[in-house]
Image (tube, rainbow, N blue to C red; front, side, top):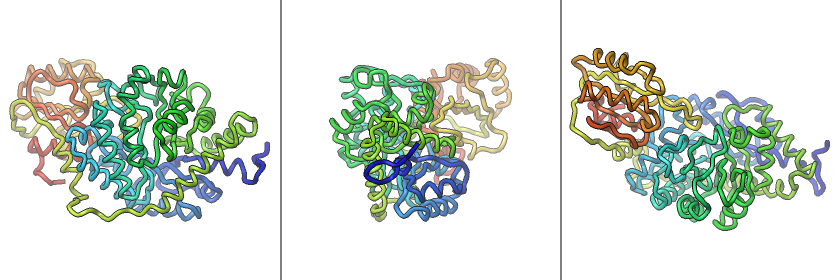
Length: 499
């Protein structure tokens, strides 16, 4: 099988020009450097690649040295619960739910500008953020605190602020997950999710933030692996020309690059594998193919070969691949020309994350002094997008203060409650949970604790949908490190400003 095509150039080189594979570990493997030298578009950066800012800066410099053209060096640094740069300690910036709760667009722009400065400083030039989904389904298993809120207008104005903040720092923004993941009840990491409602409802509820982001000049858009009734038939938006060429480019007028969500997600890979999902995405209008953190050289080579074979066999039009490669090349040229703006007067990039977390925090119920607390921490529901990132109040507590409860509250709630109450004799009780509305076991334990100890303080570090029947209630709207610190300050576990 030949990978040459009429008119010059190589199909293999064109395939490389649209691929963004990851690699494991803090050092760049030789195969990545060789691929960049022959025209690979760029790479994805995940937590395993990050040890320190100095190490990551050296890594990205090595990536750039391997190619004569600025490569795409992308990550999904959303702040809040989803962080790659700060995966070992938690993000210094609260996430979108916290920012939406404050509803100060200048604050959102400032937070994203600071986040963009952090990325630019270590050589990352594309951020797969902001998430601009309108989270209208409280039980949504994958969006939640990643969304600015449940109202289209609010999400739209903060989408603009986030895009402006990131791109003013010299980092390309990518609005996701088109045309909107917020009404779904399933996680596309596991199954194909269907957007709730017909296309007219999608236009009214889900599209305004994307329209606003496009109008604000967002450099990239990421479609979700989402089925849209009345638009994509049985296909996900990632593989639907009607969604990408018709709605996004045609109706919304988007002219930037379309970057796929991770192709190994089961929503698109379960039927016929990752390579088939990649070919279908390119055929539908995707320009850059993103691979998730657990993929390797073998997966990259398989997708590269599949794209080449698809053109050779007439499954994928050569013109579509050429157009995607051309858009990728223009995108890289744009990235090379980007110059970070100077820090604006009045910006406090060191403190803006904590200041935002403090403003987002809400306290209700009776005031309750916390003394030498026993802290019951409920393990969160698994979320692949978030990964394993520290959260909670542990950094501000003495060792041995935390009792961790598994998902569902554990097998014996009575014993758990009795044991905690006994341990906490003469001490305060604090229950820390993320998204209690999705864990009936946690609700049960918290309700029983309040019956035994009405002075129990409940700290919700997800969405405050379910609230306990009584007691002091603290809502942080996210589980970033700064959100935890803001809660610790309110509880008197640390002095304001202490790390």
